[in-house]
Length: 198
Image 1 (tube, rainbow, N blue to C red):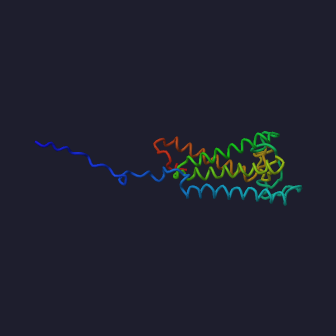
Image 2: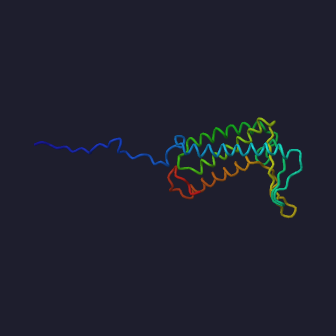
């Protein structure tokens, strides 16, 4: 009596399921690179150009009112961090900025192609960090600021700080990251790498 042994057909390599496109690493995706680097380059150009414009047109002159009781251009420099915090700690901020640059690049390399708003946020953060880092290295440790929000409730000033485009990019980028984190916790069933509903 002959025994017949049936064997399951082997799966060919070509029949194996491919990785979901949204779960591929952004490091190997041209569109992810384009999104990240385009935001970074445009943000950095906008910051450095507006700072140079402020040097030429605002430095040593009275503030320019753009919108009455709302917005003015007021040239100022500071050696601190965001909104003038931590004066006289230039070396610390240069070190922290360099570490932040490396960290952002690392996070981008580990992200996935589906995290589109995440890449935009990283580009904005890196542009802001590099813009202020440029000033700390090439402008005697002083960051150039010129945007002033003129909002008051009686004698109370709602926004006492003077800031620049780099600060705006940092705040917007961090806000988008926070929204990404919030939505990922709000919807824990979302697979890693999928685009959060931002």
